[in-house]
Length: 110
Length: 433
Image 1: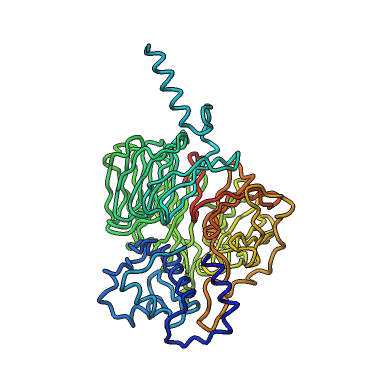
Image 2 (image 1 turned 120 degrees about the vertical axis):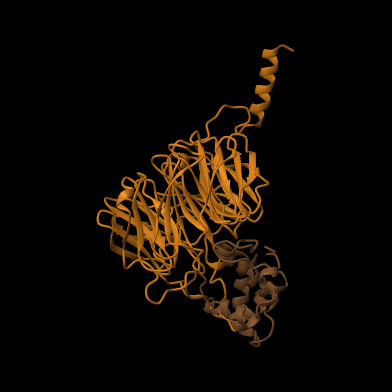
């Protein structure tokens, strides 16, 4: 259960001292995968093949600068429906998501 | 074997197939719930509050929706992958499935029940199909993503163009193969969804790119589209929106309609007589669906990330939140204890209303602000035909919960694989559903 994992993580969180640029913890990675598949999926499609938002498939993401994509995730795109996710994601997490999108995003294990 | 005996055997075989195993029955109390990741449907009986089985093989069902034939026998399911699937509600079988586009958002059925219209993103446009065969009848390219496709009186469909800021009306009453098109330009920036009033008269599109709504009187297309509610929308700061609100239905109490705020933690009250804002009701997050009970007495509201584990119930006459439920939370997350198939109504009575906005802030962690705040989402709500109960899809809990709308007590839980949209056959007889 992701939600349970997230809850446990939040309890354990004060014990962790994650460096800003380190890869997210395995539990957090799972939560991020779920976030992208489910929440981003509302507009970009559960399979990330696009919808109201553009496709986020590896083919669509490769060749675009990673820094730009991370900035889009954190700050959104003015004039479009893409919101900024900065209230919920760190820069390191946005960078991790971009890396995974460019590789071909993992499936939600849930 | 005589011909009549052969018929009898065939008839018995068909009955064995049907819901209720052998009994003749109607479909008016049946429904479906979308299991979107799995590409299947739960086949539901709303009287017995049970699943009659699972219907498989419907493709990518993210953001899927359904409409029903006028005899309530068939469901037409629109999938994200452009699939249009006709499902027999009596046998639980897929009757026909066509891939009608590359990327679809939903659809509608015509007033006379003969035509299904699908709204598409890629390629942008509307396609019209015969409801009996799913054969293509007409293709209306728009060069824009189409949203807010609704059936309106006169065997017409109205829809909006996200990229172009237009509303189109396609009239099928003369020649369905060549629908007569009426186009309204400059109706506002980025219409994101639309609704039709219960009587079918008013088509209202919400605007994402700017404040306000676009209103079309379907009794008088010559009057054109007018703009209203200049204070409705994301405002000057263009608040971020974590899930597009839906404008599926509205509650009419006197002249009042209730619609989700855009980017704001509020339900907006609209006076339809004057098309002015008559107030707001503060709620626990960004509303996605504001659904009125069929009697109009209460509204049920669900929310976007990160408040999506919550459902609030609003009393319409007093405009007050009277109950805050958290079906999306597990017991460890502060939710109610799951009650399994049989719920003791007293033991699972709704918990006291939390202070509005009390859990609207995400929980922070050293790894970054944590997501989600708690629990998983309640993705959809559907009322039984006369509204004595409401069915909620609790995605991460892999269950559907049924609540009594009068007592707000939980009546039943049904297992379902990550359920999203719930659609009951009684939608067949309403505009815009």
